[in-house]
Length: 350
Image 1 (cartoon, rainbow, N blue to C red):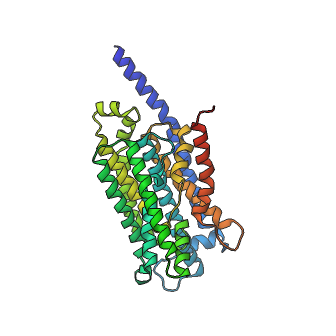
Image 2 (cartoon, rainbow, N blue to C red):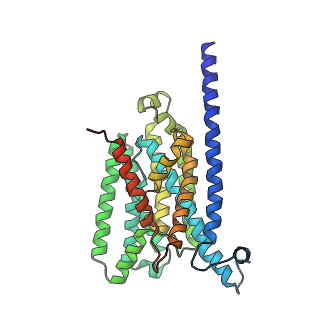
Image 3 (spheres, rainbow, N blue to C red):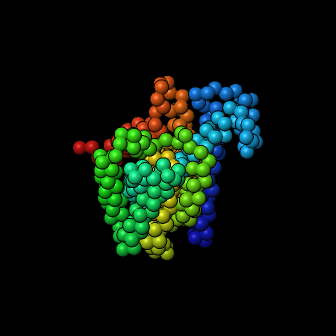
């Protein structure tokens, strides 16, 4: 009798928690649709709603495209879609890592994947591979992220503690940054150096649908790994001993989150450069509305990441000035104060 009452109480609480999560998902979905529409019409070339929609729905294979069709189909639509999928990848990666490490300060850059992917792209630029093959830089970035993933998976096979994985990621990140700095220091010409710097600053401008088709398959697989680990992350939130008593294989969970995060973040850096702090900020903003459990946070963080990065990209386009602010710079301006706030909040006062 007691167990039935307890089970009923648990089910009731779960149903009560489901209502705010659904409201949050609905609000995020509406916000994403609004941001999507605003992004299509935000830019240096003003377009009315009618002209913009005409350009968006024009036959994409036509040889005599109007200027409106070129702006909407080849500039703004790829930029908007890329901001959404990159923001979603960074947001869900941050939520999964915070659940894996049980640390609210964890974010995708902590694994060293961003720095390694950046190093791969810089090496491609250094040797001029992008001149011979347009996809050389993103493919090199994916290769750099893959190397880091292999190293982290090898470390996780030892069934080490989360602290060891974090320290390993920090070490790999520092090594990648050192080699990146070396490549920039030995840059063969100032034009290559400038290209390296602008690529590392992060941006979704001047991208095409090809960049989306290149990165999206990696992201989709990464999303699949992270969503598949959501129940195990819930159990892990209760502690490693409790999770193991519930049948959770800690090594397998770590490997799934590492692979998912690497695929998502590596693909994002490959096509847009380094865009930081999205994976740190978004989960924290959404926890008051969806709860602490990782399974409740993954999908909202994906939607929230898309909204945040799309909103940030709109801002960099409408800011006055002759030079457009790089997207990674703006997210850093947002993320660094937030990161310091989290550190001070967790630090006990004397």
